Length: 260
Image (cartoon, rainbow, N blue to C red; front, top):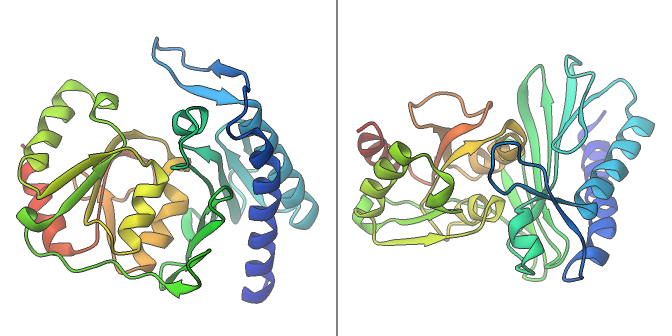
């Protein structure tokens, strides 16, 4: 699989998922709560239809590859190459008609993320990365993505989807960082990480993430020059408590507060 073949295939995957999802957006679609713990974890027909379409294309083109998806589970997860799919990251925004959601497509080789895409079919934007470089394609034109420098927390802009998604102890630690930064905003899911890669914000701090929430974003963040780890400075591959930063200096300062 050459780089050119791969880029073309990923573009086709994004197109197939987008064409499947767009007709559902801002319609009166049914919503199912898949949470077993008493919370609200929505899933729609759009999620399942998009993942089904992407899986079919992957199996047809690369039958030896594995697939791990949010909605339909794992197939050949021990394969050398494994696709990681989140058809609609930000389903809560999706069902509210807000365009801050996206389709996450990642590829790992022997467990390491080597390529990631965040595709937003409604705004027709695509953010991609391979760990060494990252790029944007959309109505504003094509360009390289570069995270911006930020040395001090008091100059930083911070995003999180919602502190209400955090456990009480984590929320208190998050608020220590929030009180130190210049500006804190809520909402965004995967879009927040892409805004960091694009140089518009400096920090994204979240908890309770699954591997499919974060693996496709790692090559985009790192390709833009940013840094993404767990709160204890570990590998982010398994999800959990995640911090992404555009500058290692502000990452280190935020980590001091998150350690309690």
